[in-house]
Image (cartoon, rainbow, N blue to C red; front, side):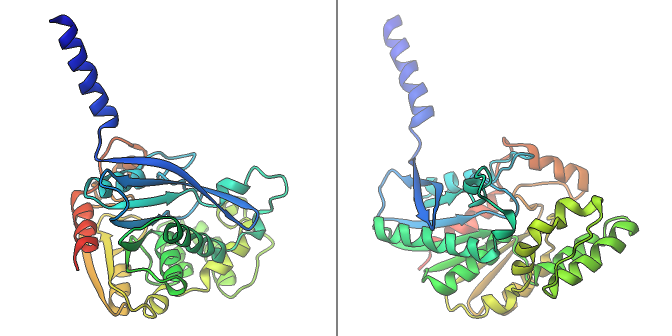
Amino acid sequence: MKRSIFLVLIMLTLRLSFGQDFFTKDVSIKVDTLTLNGTLTIPDKGTHVPVALIIAGSGPTDRDGNNSQMTNNSLKMLADSLASHGIASLRYDKRIFSIMNDPRFHEDSVLFEDYVSDAIAWLRYLKKNYDFTQYVIIGHSQGSLVAILAAEQEPVDKLVSIAGAGVPIGEVLKKQFESQPEIVQDQGIPIIDSLSHGHRVKNVPAILMSVFRPSVQPFLISWMRYDPAKEIKKLHLPVLIIQGNHDLQIDTNQAIILHKAARRSKLVIIPGMNHIMKDAPAERNANIRTYFDPALPLNKQLVNEIVSFIQEN
């Protein structure tokens, strides 16, 4: 009797650990001389299902939505949630992870267009190697613009923008600087203006070096030249635009701008959702604390909206 109970407990444990409705596998592709790494999440029913390419936001953000300073597992949770609804996904580490430990790497060689090329390469990998029924591209934050530009060059069935800017990133940065002390505004806004016009800045104040260091300026200049509203207007596919009203980085007006520009778009403003797609208070410090809580689940409406959008004909 004791042995039977013991076996049942083992089976329950295995079910909880491995018996989810999906499985994952590590995958990689070659882009130029780089090896890019990702995770493919597939429902138990197999690959004859829709698949979503999930593109992370700005900074050294990995496939799970984390970086060295912050762990929230937002993109991993998104992939797992989609799989539980019968939707496969591929999420990947940005190219910075493949090259930053390479002694030959120079930060000023990375441009925004490289991220677009990487997304296109992953889409082509999925199409070449699997029999998915539908190809969806999901971009979060900076990844929204990457997704839009990739969809212009590589056909997809649908696009989801989450917390994406509707205006050039230079304008977004200037808006964010308005909440900073006056001395930071006085030093930072002229730098943004210069970069927006394609001009590098040699003398960057120490307080702003992490944001505007000379080696990252080519990337910022290449990013600033794109107007998301103008780019999304070029697309002729269904688009879902999602924005939380407790997002400290991107306000709801950005989503409205994208929605007005996109020809076939649906706009969803989610009450209480913040930038990392989780429920959070409006108060700044409490909101930011959620960025460091990997146990906090994704906003439920977010998942439901994406699943419905992908599954509808």
